[in-house]
Length: 199
Image (cartoon, rainbow, N blue to C red; front, side, top):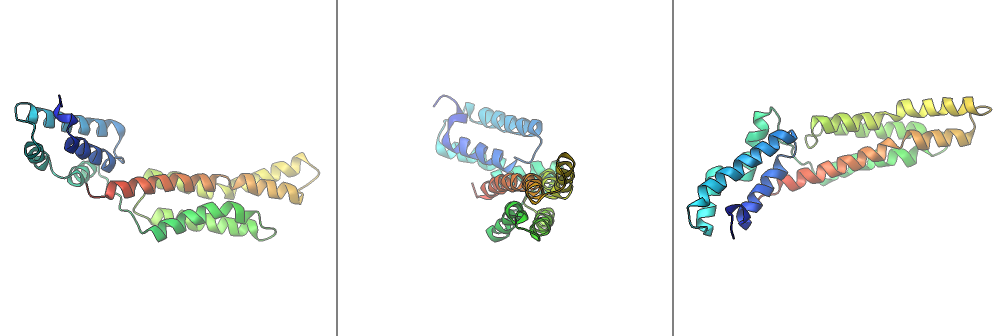
């Protein structure tokens, strides 16, 4: 092993810090990881590269969780906290179901809107998503309130009026952003769960 940075304990430590600081701006995150690498390399360059020496240097730095929490605090961010799988799954299910529910005749669009709005409320109240993720998801989830009527009006102007088929197409197209929001939220939640695992 030529470099201390190639040691498995060092790689695992740095990977855990990288996962825990995913919320940081990219430049700040790169700077933090570069500082950690430099400190580890300098500390272990002249020392024998045994496991005890590596553990001692890493212990001086603090756990990956401590490093990540301190870096997030410096940026004025609170570390995301994963919520229970049940609450996450409920939020994601509501977001996904908004599309197919909206296709049910008569009451479908209203039920789809309700599902999307409840999912948006759940997202805004959760601590596991960042402000940016919450804003993006909320925009995607409430966009059917504007998109569906706009598409329906456009379809009625292009044809002889608003037919059942045109209304169904308007719902299908208008509610497409809801599953996209669910997919993005699911990925972000998985990242938070991974970052919260003890390293």
